[in-house]
Length: 61
Image 1 (tube, rainbow, N blue to C red):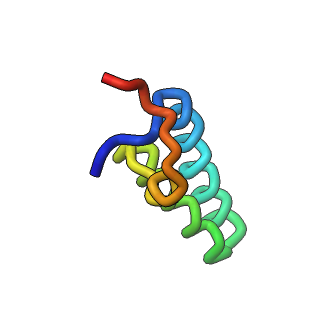
Image 2 (tube, rainbow, N blue to C red):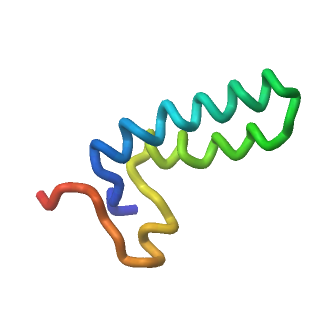
């Protein structure tokens, strides 16, 4: 898996994922599980949807 998520994306995705999970727990809703998606893609640096559309926000090395 080639990294395709840039630094700014990571800075946005990780807190957003955490907020979604906490809100789901607080509201007792299973929809909070959707927060796992941005959290994992932010931590791993890979977004499968970006690769489908050939998008990359990561810097070229």
